[in-house]
View 1 (cartoon, each protein chain N blue to C red):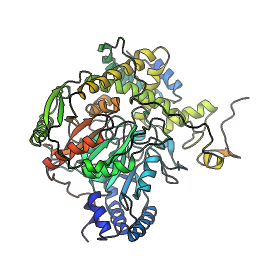
View 2: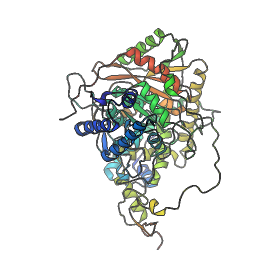
View 3: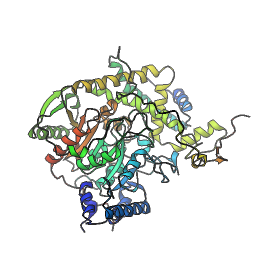
View 4: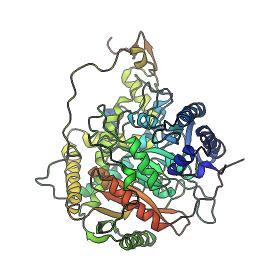
Length: 494
Length: 95
């Protein structure tokens, strides 16, 4: 048996049906990979071995009966933001120490109903606030990629750094992730994986730890565009328990993979060509344009004039919503409690001990912009700007089918390199935030290798509920980019 | 906009987060930096622009007004740091 951890979800689906190996063997191979590799990468914070093997054996029974479901036996990692029944869920924050939900998030329940197997819970930035996975209370995740000729530890991006690192290092075949300002697409770009943020409302937010509710959206990180389509098909769907879940039928996403893009109109937004952008990002973008042209697409220069205001507006809206959402962590109902002289003192001490520095910063910014006298100047202003950002997209999508942009302003950086200055860290999400602000779907596809020998991604953004367009065009980029190098395995110990 | 020490302490109080003197000093600089940076939004002409209330064009659906869940208080208090008889226990609030 060749190593089943190297297969894509689509390949594994066939191999399981052909009984090349069992779901139990497949789960065990991944558990072994976690056992030997996780100490170096710190992607999994809670492997669930017994649970995984039980589920895999149940899948084998179904396979034997020919009663397979769309993701039967596929081993997945689950970001610690998704509540998993009876399995510790903390959003990588001390404030949720020891929390074991009595319920399952809708997205993970949908995956289990489709036959997928949970290998364990994945590290992430605390409450998904971060772009490097350095804010987790379980310590940083390490990127399996290294710079040429260097063994310096690189970040995998964030906040879904554990998801991206685990998928890139073959510890799971796919992972759930969430994206509030770029937390799926940015780590995907930095680890050479495919990261999809669906349209706001496509996947239920029920049972997912809330960060900024008008922006949060769950999606998959995988090793191919086809796998992304398979996984979204299982995750997505209407959910009565989430009032912003949209009741639109889930199409056969996989059918879009491989469709011709001849005659499609691809927009190139000029505002994404930013001053000081590294040459290699510009070059990769031009390469992407050439690939799509070669495949028969028509290219058009377009303008999204409010692009540069998306990030500052985001840093008002997201902290404001976070300060409200995180008010629930009060030391009374779950998680950490630090005793105090009275109830207020107990709240203050609990939250001081439970939240990390980045979370505190954002809660305080949010509290400030929502406080009396500042609400109009900051929060309402940002929401007006948000209307303009969304309007920009609506206008260009009257003329084009999809937009092509860089995914990140640069490749993976070293641990500690950007953690000293919050704003420098925030700038990582400059190309990804506008899609969140507008509720639009976006995907990051591995497209090339940086001068340092690490991966770079290109981003596609489409109209709301047109994820099929992302898979269709994304597949063309994936094919054109060809087989990219893989990170050399330095992390496994035998 | 300069965020001074008194403002940091005021918003920390509103947010119910105790901050040490050293933390307050760092936050003073960081919050001033971040709020100064978002200040660039004042360049944007937003006269007559409606603030966004929902990012998708959708109608919030109504569900039937009926009880669909509940009846397991022991599950609800299971994760509480302190509980008695299925109630959450908090420090004394009223003397």
